[in-house]
Length: 178
Image 1: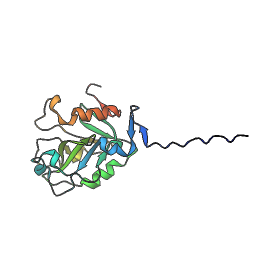
Image 2 (image 1 turned 90 degrees about the horizontal axis):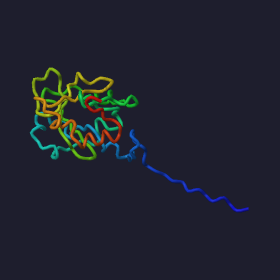
Image 3 (image 1 turned 30 degrees about the horizontal axis):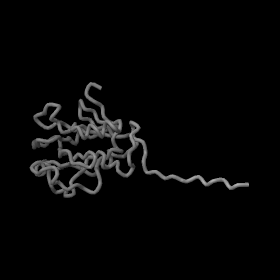
């Protein structure tokens, strides 16, 4: 009797994303993320004067694609995936930012797209970049507000085509009116 041919074991580190797009499990954090700077003493007001490409990011994203359920274009609301503990981690990490804000950088497919800042709602300081007011951070997510004064949608860095591409490919983008 002939021995049965051994079936080869195939190991694959790819998984299907929300829209059926293959995603490298280990590369998910580079597809989309909200990152703090490596130097937490730099304020958002200071970072706003620096080109985004010059900012050095922390080792891990504060919020990664796997933490995101969806992002609404109409409101800038980033909803947390219910299976993550993003809220507790986020609140513990950012704490109460100084009046000059705590800077963050949004990254899509490994590229720094824009800088923004976490601010206390009582801060009178504003930057010409997107802002997250700490009182908008809830268990469900947070709102990334448009720069002030608000740009028209084609110039809004929150919905740069590279960000929209990643979010659309992974089923996490809710277009305005959609």
